[in-house]
Image (cartoon, rainbow, N blue to C red; front, side):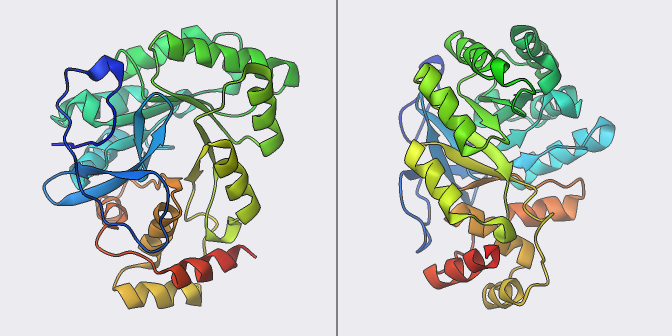
Length: 298
């Protein structure tokens, strides 16, 4: 059973919500609240506009297609993930939706993100409707522009189409992916609407304090993908901290994201790794450890 705190979205007023307690690490601050998954797992969430709660740990599904993709999503849900990240470009929305249904979980207990690909500019409504059919749901929780449009003149019209989809309840929140700060500001200045999320490549070696602060100052949730791709998991800083907590360096990297209130979406199709990546709630990083990992970004 999934427990949530905070205001309930208007479309889900019939859903029972209860408070849950979440452990906070010394490095955490801000409006994080708890969402309990399974029988003994507390997961923090971050708030998006419209009283939407987004789990800070998500499961990435890039390259997870066919039966392997379906099995991976089922394994992730069994391991405790309640946040799934897919995209039209991934070609696996049907597998993701079927796994959610077959998991036995309620749709409202799983946060689902999908994304609009660059080649669908001008076909936004058609694309989200196709995504909903593939996923087998009447709405997603978050819809992102996967990449900035190749033509700058398309940026504002595309963003307005996402806002329209949100206003028509096809998605609960909208955001972007792979946007620079200047591009975010263009959307905000043109529409008065701030993207709820910007999903970008992020890891300790890519840590950029200024960029992190720019997102916070604008009220935009930073979501990191490919947390391990640019990470040296043999780095002495990561191995030292991992040994201190009796966890793996990969688990330290994921916990570092969460303790910075950065959403992170590791991906794997290996059941053991899926379970290990979900098992990051029994330890927390100290403020000093967070600073040491931050320093890996130069």
